[in-house]
Length: 333
Image 1: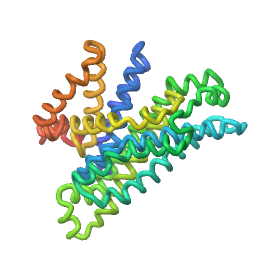
Image 2: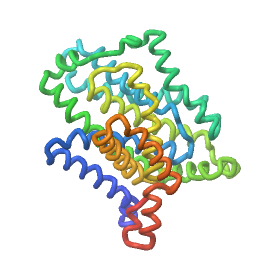
Image 3: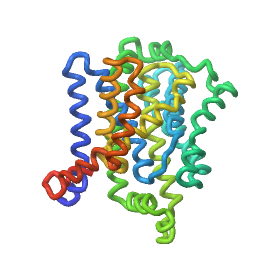
């Protein structure tokens, strides 16, 4: 029993971090939106890390899964608004639809792209988000470039008070929950046959194949899991928080770049890394946007590159070495 509990010790600092952010947001005046933004970056890093961290593959089309998840929630609200009595059940249907749509897209993309390796895989995924965006706009799917605005539907279904609470509070609470669940799934994978197989293929894919590991199967598991969480983040942090969807905004590639930075800053393949990376990145971006608005990316880019070059294992990698052979070692994964 004690050994079973010890398997989950690394989850404690992650959950403590999310709980601290939540309590600070609730108790300190004017801090909620900042904490919600940090939770978004942590959740984004946590979800992205399941694929990048565990396989070493870089998916430049990742934002497409967030965008599809956003559409899933928007479609559920707009299409079901006329059905009386569904109430908050529409939110549950929207989350389910976002999950299914992101998973199906990841299976379609993965069936082709996961046959490639390394840089070839990364190049193949660059066009996924742009291709999907132009498909929606060109074929006028889901209102095409006009997007979907569903503020009126939310007010009609839930009432102004609850609709406002969903946008300003409960959408962010859901992001905290998604981040915590993504952390638990990451640790479960790390401690199971899936994690060992993914580690083997990350270190040497050919050797993993020779050992009898079905690398394609495990890559698809990591890819679809990571994409599913992205769909849920899009449905909550984007669709519910800002009740409209426009293709140029939800398929913007810089969100993928931010996810890569967060994972590499914190430590790819670690459990605590996305939390640390999300906090460092989110706070730095916020601080720079306050003191030097408009120049934050110009300053931030070279600093990030230097940090990644100087600390290839990320902040958690340094922390691991520092706490090795101490009582705190078992909490750092």
